Length: 419
Image 1 (spheres, helix red, strand yellow):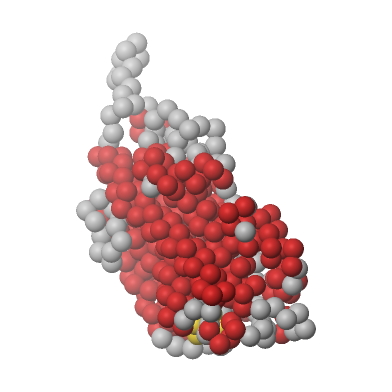
Image 2 (cartoon, helix red, strand yellow):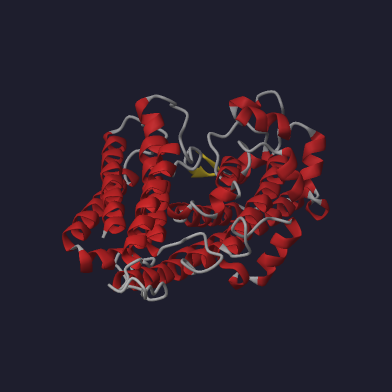
């Protein structure tokens, strides 16, 4: 992570220097220098336009979907808890919860090419997506009747209690995933009707009711943090109810040192209040802090740690066994960022279209690298789940393709900064 931050800072410095050299030109008359800082060059205007397309048609809709899906997940789990107690919980109810989880999870993973914003600044990423799950600690918490009672009363701070009482390695997606999935399958009503059989829970007699109490409270916390993400980026364009809940939670939502939302901060680059002095620094952020960073994480950590044996337990989504789906969505996040829309084709105002206009050869090689990474992960998704076979050829092929894409993205960032 440190290396990536350094690289991003380097590219932004290059972009700043390039911008200054281009805008500091004056007439030959030293007594009457002509400097127009408001006039954008053709390329700067293109960067401004593609940033607007990216923010409004990639970042905003994905965070909106994430907020909506996690809200739905919370409500379904609250209902499931009540139905369980009434003896009316059906398998269809659990199956719907699992599908909503998958939809929410996909939206989250498709947002990871722009973790450089509120997700990182407010610690939301580790708060909702830390793994591996600490099942031993979870078993102890669920065996504590006082903790369960505190989590159960959602009308009296149950969600806030989740934030206060549940450790980060049990919060978020993976704590919920453990409750509703096992061995790549949806959890059954029969399993929830008995006691937890996981080895970390042996001798504790944890019931399905207690697990659903935990899942509902944690889902409320997950929803709140995803509302924070949405409001942090969309500002007053976010759903009013979501804004009100974020205010109730007293979460920070603006860029440090000002009152701009993260979306406004990008869209208002070069203007007073924005942290972006040039449009090239915006490009560096999208490409390096965003796209390159998630490439490095997927190849080097998400796949790499388990594949190389440095940490065999460092496997994302082991209970649903959807690791490769997560990784595919991560690279899809890059695809959408480059294309300026949620599509496999590039919008006219996009980084990919910009490259095609000004450096077609580089655009073609970037597209080839992107296609290769997605193809490798498509093959992996159809094969043995990563959690079962961490040393499969699919893991190695995916790592290699994603690393090649990372190199190409950084090449693009260097070229845009210098041209």
